[in-house]
Length: 293
Image (cartoon, rainbow, N blue to C red; front, top):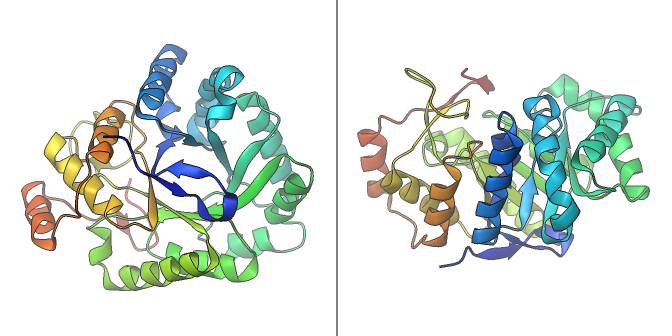
């Protein structure tokens, strides 16, 4: 069964509801990256999401050779974590060079959750000015924002009040939504996105807990890696028709996630999710507003 598609906000692009998470390419060879491209083409994935910071630019470099033949096949998104106009401008030009493209479809302000950094980005001389300029110059068509932690939904709402963004990105999984404050702010953000036709992208669908023992995947959290659990977690996220799911940052988990998405049925019940949570000893991967590393 193919992976469902959905209009990506007001962009006019019909994106697959699973988006490739380019963080998976941050520490792989070009040969491994090229084999990953074949997996994406096999499943019909038509949307790529990467960032200048993934692997210190290596993830974008791995995508670069794909673009010569396949640029037209993908909605291409990247991110900048820089906070000033000049730094963000330079960062985007570096991304274009590494990706070997003239423009991207979406540039996102990366992990914009710190209030002081938010003020810097949104003020005169801040990164947002560079992204607006890039849009005027045809270097990007759309502008979005991303973030992590428990305050992210509230910060995204603040960003949307300040500027007419095209997309947001934040964590979404069953465990995280057991935090009542986060669930409430996420649902408020979701309603706002639906009203304003803003694309709602989600991450951390298969997060299990902070790492315990040897790290055998490239994700910074320990992921679910058994087929049934991945299917349940992916089906739970995609069971919300308003969201997109960005695949986890590990090329070896990718085929299982795509297979699960292609066969996703009705949303698992809370009882199903509680059984999985108990069996796999799942835990929150965030503390307060920061990461657990």
